[in-house]
Image 1: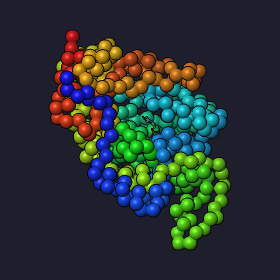
Image 2 (image 1 turned 135 degrees about the vertical axis):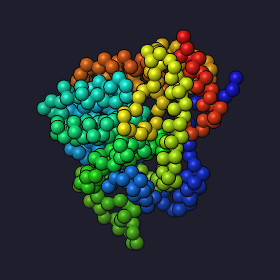
Image 3 (image 1 turned 90 degrees about the vertical axis):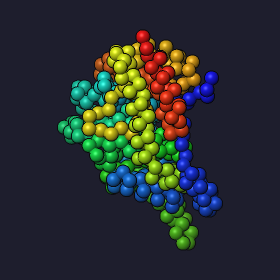
Length: 374
Ligand SMILES: Cc1ncc(COP(=O)(O)O)c(C=O)c1O
């Protein structure tokens, strides 16, 4: 039996490996010059105005809510079909999540249903771009403007994704993940990007204990100990080791995403002749270019399909069990969720990473055909 094929595997380029030893020898490994350089490079690449680097996307999302003034008494509309970070951060700031159903094709928030959930306490919406497939950004902004809502993009899957040519996160406030298996892996890390200078300033303080100046900024030339602490913050900044890896990985992301799209297209072609009630891909929004963090399919008898693939040495995943089915969210306010509740039992994610060989991709294609056959 050939080696098992993993669902995800991180890819670290040679330049990042070399940059890691450089930074370790540099005499500065905390929050410092490389973190600032990564923030600038990421903002330029994305076309965003401000970037604030954190130690995870979870931290970036919580800080984004806080920096936008979301707190106790507020409600935030979001999708149940996400990693629990998206929902947890709403609680972390003392607000309440309100779950809205998803679109049956894309698994993204169904904005047509979200209007029914807007109430007097609704302040914001967290838009998760499922699997790297962007929501329709024009529709999203129009919806937010109509209902006076702040939009925070949970772009954990969508690093490099575009809608009508514009990168997700280039406008408004968005949070990216550099977790080990994301499209731009650095181990753990996140980036809050925003076009609002006040939000960026507050986020910069909140990620570093509420302190008004970084140790590195204070260290220019002579040692200056003095700083002010205008508010309570958290210890959630990025460090220069992670940033050095990020700086070296960033120039490759567009090419890596193209490779992810190629592999996904092969998997989708392999099931193209299947009856869509038995197997079909999660679709990308028209006009969008996916970052393809996931290649997710909707298949009948999902657990049996996963078991057949496992027997063929192929790892799979489920993204996600809807969050309202977990204990902290059983009582959360929600609309009817028939699509999310039916779809998650069919969702299966196929191996998608940059260390897949041509032969591996062929093996997955053959196995998914066999597993979804009559
Ligand atoms: C949709 C989504 N949001 C947020 C996160 C949190 O990212 P991080 O692990 O960087 O905190 C993840 C991570 O898997 C995610 O998939």
